[in-house]
Image (cartoon, rainbow, N blue to C red; front, side, top):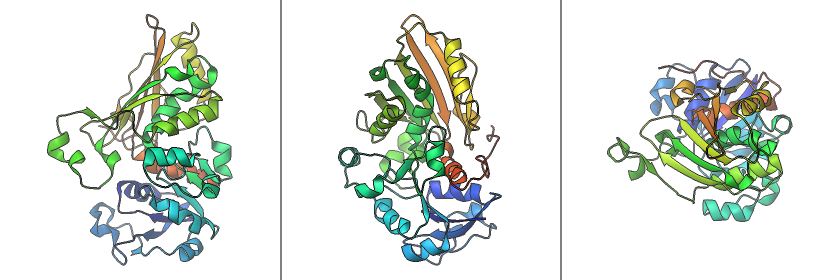
Length: 346
């Protein structure tokens, strides 16, 4: 059994890690860590986990954490893991970071987009970007995984096959994304106040969102072509889910059927990407509570554009579920172990 430790167990990402790991056939939740609730039971924060026999929350001690766990998930805000990860890795433990501290290769880009100092460069260089479907071999040999952001997960799984094919102009991608409120975490602010967001939808961080350089970096890494994307996120009044609509200018006379064949072959052996029929319109409800990403393609012959639709559950495939998928690959376990195979519906 893989001994698992979770830092940030009192957040939404931590809660989802616990929900899946509690039933994982090859892993056990060995330790839960908190910087402010030492000695307390997690049931005090999350009554829904009552009866799981979880360990009490304990203080963060990197040396002891390294000895007591095989892998540690860091479900923490940006900046926390940058300090904690090097100390943990020096103990030889594997780390899966759900924050953005190790996703960007460029320290200058991190400072520009995250408005804080980056993690030490020597540790950033050790990180493997954990988009499992595209970096499987690297993930298998990694000690440190930079778990992708929720928006980039949905956007990249949709755009990478076409970007790599050369059928789309690299700088033509326009990515319109809509997310449920859980993506903002459990922190209380006016931006997620019920009376402010209910019966409303709005864009935010227009041309400034920190996931923009992450998308561009991975498009370049996989396709070899630099790309400047136009990425605009929106907040919608629902709890979970992301819908990405990506528009790209086609460089060739490509049919929807050819694109369908490309995507079907690309993801044929990827258990959590479901390529939907040509012209279908995936709903976020159809992946709710699961680790799936559903993708469909449309071709607009009038404008010469491809329109890709991609849906995920932002807390699962966009965070905890993908992190567990990466853990499974790191420890040579079945990739779908402990992860739900059927979404919750309705």
